[in-house]
Structure formats: C-alpha cells, structure tokens
Image (tube, rainbow, N blue to C red; front, side):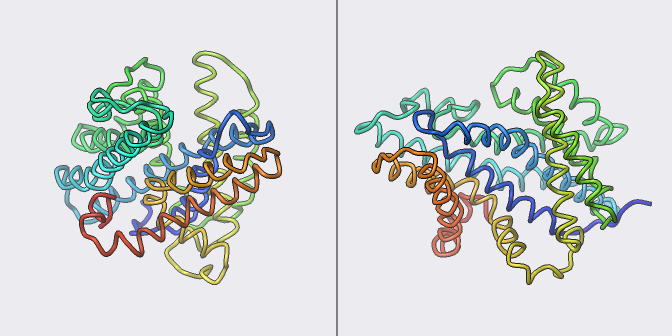
Length: 346
C-alpha cells in the first residue's frame, strides 16, 4: 500500500537541526592550530553530513510527488523549477556576490583565500570559485538535481526508474566541474537514496533502535574500510548513506512521534532546540560563516592554541554560526521583502 503523503515530517526537521550543527563544526577549521583529535572528528562529520541533507531533499521530493499523484495532476514543471530557482539559485547568487564584495574589500587590507577579480565574478555563475564561498556548492548542485528530477518525471517509466539508472552512472562517470556537474554526479545517488527511503520513514515503525544499530554497523565498517578507485568511491557512498540512515533512525527511536506530524515531543528541550535549528537550517547554511569567521578571528587574536581552547572556540562558533542567522532572519530579513527574497525565504 502506498504511504500517505504529508506536508511535514518532524524527523526531517530534527535531522536538519543536527546536520546544520555538523556543517558549522566542519567549517570551523584551520590547519595551523587544529588539534589532531579534531581532525578525526572532522573526518567523521564529512563522511555523512552533506549526504544527509541530500537524502532529506530526496525524501521530501518523493513526498511532493506522492502529494501530486494524490491530487490526480502531473507535476507542474515550470512552477516547480521556478520555486526551486527562487529557493536555491537566488540566495546562491546573492550570497556569492556578498562574499565576493566582502573579500574584495578585505583584499585591500588582508590576504584572502581567493583574490576577487573580474574572472572571479564571471566564474561564480558556472563553477565553484572556492575561497569563502566554497560551501555554496550544495545549493547549486541541489538545484541541478531538481532540474534532472523534474525532467525525469515526464519520461516513460517515471522519475524513480530514470534517476535509479542515472545516479550510479554519473557516480562513476568523470564529469567536469563546470555547472557543478562533478558535484551532481557525486551526490545524485544520495538524493535517490532519500527517495528510496520514503516508504520506510514516512510512517512510524517499531524496533527503530535495531534499525539504527544495523545502520551503525554498516557505517563503522565502511568508514574504516580503506580502498582506492571505484571501490573506494562506492564505500564512501555506502558510508554516507548508512551514516545518514543511522542518524534518522536514532531520531525516530528517541522521538517516536517524529515520523508523523504530531507534537508529542514538543516539551522535550532537545527536540525544541533541534526543531528550531532545523526550521532555520537553510538560512543558517547561507549565513553561518559570518559567525564562524568572527569567532575564528577572535580566537586567532587571542593566540592561545591548545586542544582545550580550540574546542571552547568551536562551541562558540556553533553558537555564533547558528544564533546569528536566526537573529538576522527574525529581526532584519523578515522586515524586508527584498532581503527575504534574496535569502530564499517565502
């Protein structure tokens, strides 16, 4: 029986809340003073934190297809693409321009990672220019994936068939970085895995602790299993999928109502905090580097580099990187239709 479609799944919001904290932690880095223990933690974070967001996007896309099918109408592709362009590409361009402008000003006084030239401005429309804007790859890549998924809905056999064929092909096919095609090839498989997980996670299930344990076993095995070439790439994919699955299964086990739309866990402080972070995860992703860089500059000015001080600074970076965007959205952006539009808000 086809699972019922829903407008909202609370486990997605909770998973986004955890995922965005991992993103912030992963971006608070500097080889000059990072303790070795944090390098190990960073490897763990990077093994699944962005696959998690891709899988959640695939899950929600499959849910939107289920709701569209329930209405008896086909997916309105122009409207869908327009919505995704506003949600993803408008903030990609606006934040890229903001970062480029900031780097251009700072470049007159400091050494920046990527000097801002005319070539920089042109390249940011079709490739990752690196430097402070490197994290925006996810936004552009997700838009390209949505384009592919929307087109596939019109093909004979449907989107599920064609993305299932295309995802493994692109994973092992050498692609150029232009228009983020290489990123798309590496991440479409996670989006498709999220679509595949829809039937499993859209309803509450018993024994979620057991599912989480099984996922953790696979994740640990693939995380520590070293291989090169195609085998290594396949292991990384299995690691990303199993790590994401384990996290979502743990959320479902800890907060049983999270696989539905009820608010039974709303009194739980951890649930409330993660829900708030999840609701603002898009804005936090776009703006978190402002808080992270502020903490990093302060830490470098203090100059006391020990493992203890680094992890204390990391905690401040998590607070600044998450709270500053939320404050900006609530106190500034929501009062300006233009700023709301530029950051992909409704």
